Length: 396
Image (cartoon, rainbow, N blue to C red; front, side):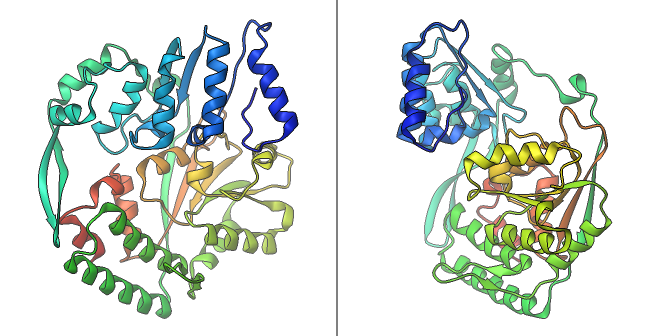
């Protein structure tokens, strides 16, 4: 049975019958990870495990529970007492740092790595220094140690299979399309950069979140809009959408277009529908109804279906779905999260793909676009790296 977040009386009755019915020899309850951010989803999973004690709980893409402070992580780890067997699956167990491993392994067993406490684990394998940013001081991980020892511990209860060893997949090809900023964008970009540097010097940018907010705003300007803290989105004259349309005119077959911001997804979809027809485009992001998402994927995968452009937000559509009908992937904008980039790339590059996959990044030279893409290509997670003295270099 598949978990449905929309609550209806009929579904609730079917779910109850499924949970308590012990006649089937094999019962599979499939839930998306976000279900565990809610009380209703967590209670449903707990009830299923209670009524079916001979069970196994498998967390796919287990990096989604690497954040030990997240509600979904806490709720999933709390299932340990009801889960007879536990397994995790992931292609990239470490996307930010070796510290990502703690919660994932803690779900398997409290002492899988030999530590009950995250801070004890951190003290063993990380180098921490006190840093100063403005008037605020904080502890920052600056390096790692004893990684050979950590690797040996992982080898005791894990197995690793490389994609190249088990899948005969075609190559990935990367290319860029440069998008020059308009005079309006240049003016606004310089103003925002000066403001960000002034905030940095005054100590206002004292957290990772505040730094990433400034990076995000600079990136939004490159995309052709700006979302203030309060007020409506400001549209800025841009060449990016026209460059995307030029790219799509050159393409053969179907394509995936990833965009970080909802505003861009809507603008891209509108422009593509205007040029190629209303049935040629589907959007897949937070506002896409759950009951429509699977149909979108299925239609996109059909060779003879008119749906040609899958326009999505990688944080929403970058996990768990198969989009091998496309061999071209365009990044209208990039997330600064390495895991999101890697996962979104592999929606087209997986079992069923027979052609080489081309990844096209739209980049405005001399801007934060280049910084973000360069970090991602170097397998650096910006959310974990842009701290301390590195902030000025990024903003400049």
